[in-house]
Amino acid sequence: MPGPKDLDPSASPRAFLGAELRFAREKSGLTQDELGQPLFVSGSFIGQLESGTRRMHLEYARQIDQILGTDGFFTRNCVAAAKSKYPDHFAEAAEAEAVATTIREYAPLLIPGLLQTEAYARAVFRAYQPTAPDPVIDDLVTARLDRAHLLADPTTPLMWAVLDEAVLRREVGGPAVMAKALAHVAALGSRHRIIVQVLPFSAGGHASMGGALKLMAFDGAPPLAYFEGPGTGRLEDDPATVAHHELAYDLLGASALSPQQSLALIESVAEDYAHEDQP
Image 1 (spheres, helix red, strand yellow):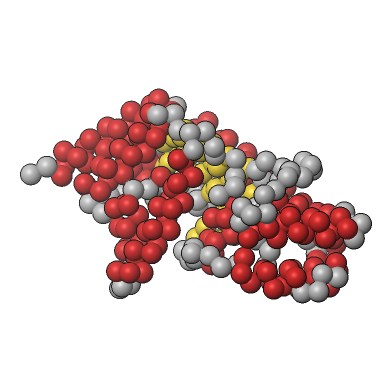
Image 2 (spheres, rainbow, N blue to C red):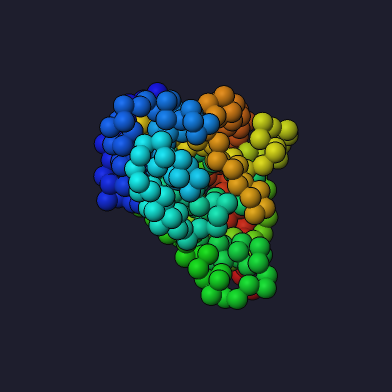
């Protein structure tokens, strides 16, 4: 496993708890594997808690306080650290995404959240919740756009997206919204801020027909895979499972159009939507 990196405890509640966990564990003379055994988790999982890539859940915090004799410290601070502006099923993945060095994502139906425009995101959330009050939709859109600030840095994280052709063809929000949304993705690719490929319908069956896939790599912590369905999400750290889906992603990239061909197709479809929107 990679060695631990130095953390700035003031960076986030998770970083603070991670730094304190490492200090308390080392003070007790335990390795990550030894602390993980009574929790029925791997040493890698403990390393992810210490590096701030995983959220400390309350049940783990209580047991850690007992094992390390920390007098309820982690239990008390875990409650505050668990607060999130994201839905419960996605909160931990969003927190991991924020500290990832590499994000690779296969999107079967929708433009990935990090690449969405405001109008596209609003159309998606309104479709999900047709009767929700406008302030609820506003909050969801704001949280999604806040995530996109990750791409404000010119180099980190490395973002590589494979979009199924259905992403381009499914008209979300109308022609004008689609034209701007796809133009935004194409612009990010043209500026070399992201790598984007399109998996065409002509590719036929492929390695990730089960649904969306997000792979995240970190500096000093094991990689994670995230799977999402309607109202559900699962973060996976099992090395064999993550390796299996890394291979699946490599196969998707091999079956997809090249980045240059993909940009040309995205720009062409965006222009078609723009012309369709004209009177």
